[in-house]
Image 1: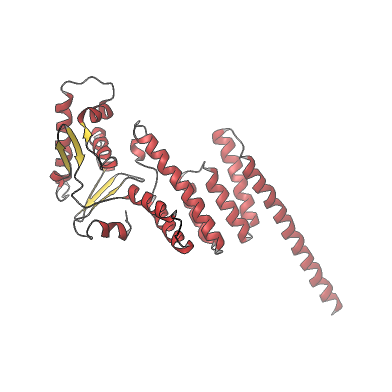
Image 2: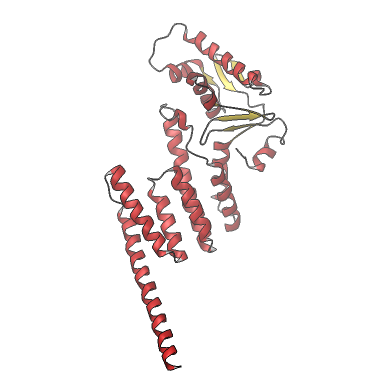
Length: 289
C-alpha cells in the first residue's frame, strides 16, 4: 500500500513509520517487514488488532472488546482470554520481524489501546482526510482534483472485507464506501470540466471492479463514453448493465440510467445521420468532378 507523503511527514518522516492498510485487506508494514491477515487463520486475533486500529484514538474498555470478540458466547475467564489474545498478537508481529511489535498495544486502567506515540499511518484515515480537504471552500479546482485522485488511489477495496460479517465493521464499511462513491462522482465532474474523459473511463472501470452493482459508477462511465463520442461502446455497456442487473438482482436499471440510454440512442442516431450526410456530400462532389 502506498500512502500519501503528506501523511508520512505528519508523523515524522519515513523511518520507523507503521503503515496499516484496511481498505481491501488488513496489512501492517514497518521496518521493511509486513504481516497480513491472509497468511493467518486466527480470526479472533485479527479482529482484535483491527478493532484497536480502527478505534485507535481512544482507550477501549476490556468489556467492550470481550463483547466484540465473543458476542454472547460464554467463555471461562474472558479477561484472561483477552490478555492471552493480546500476547499472541505481539508474538505474531514479533515473529514476522515487525519492529516495536511488543509496544504497539497498550494496557492501562482496564482498557487496551493502540500506542499512538508510535508514528502510524492508516490508509482509511488518509482516504478520509484527503476527501475532507478536497471539500474545503477555498480549495482551487486543480488542487481539488489532485486531492480526489490521491484519495481514489488509497481505496484498494472495501473496508476490512475479510471481516465484513462483523457487526462493528458493517457501518464503517458502509461509511467508507459512501465516501468512495462520492469521490468517484466528484472526480468525474472535475475531469469533465477539463475534458479528460479517458481518465474518467479508467476511474469508472476501476470502481466497477470494486462494486459492479453501484449504478453511480456505470452512470459516470456512460457519460464519459458519450462525451468521447464512443456511442456504440456506451450502448454495449448499457446492454451489459441490463443483463447483469436482471440476471443477478432481478431488476431493471433505474429511470436515470434509462434516460441516459435514451439520450445515448438519440446521439447515436444523430451521429449516424451526420455521417450519412457527409458520405452523400462526398459522392455528389465526386460525381461533379
